[in-house]
Image 1: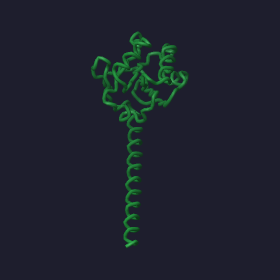
Image 2: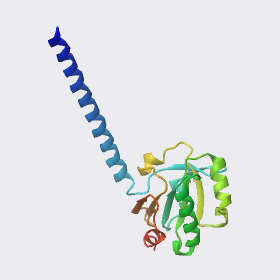
Image 3: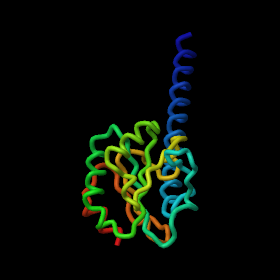
Image 4: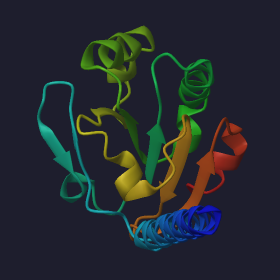
Length: 171
């Protein structure tokens, strides 16, 4: 009686181990695919705060693109936004797309607090469907993805980043 119980427990353990290993492998493969796909500007769709769809086709041609993934309640994101504003001239001709998955109300309040609408280079967008990670991979806040004018990824930063590091990749 004891032997069949041990056998069943052993088989369950091996089955669980195989299942978990497969899940880890598949997740790793997915991360590799996302990393490779984001080397060129992904086909994304976010929304303006007015609810209008904003896709990769709407990105201005011939300009560098700087995605800033943020959360209005994130202290590091607040600091990064202050630094972007302080160094806005160093962004040159870059288009800055600030994307958040927070509520439109919080994003709007954040935008108004920092007067982001007064900066023509900055577009504030809402990740309504929470798919940023699908197109860009890691979705920590703040994250910065810099694309050149040919829509190729130049650099990705995760977490608070000095402006000098960001702006040196925009010119």
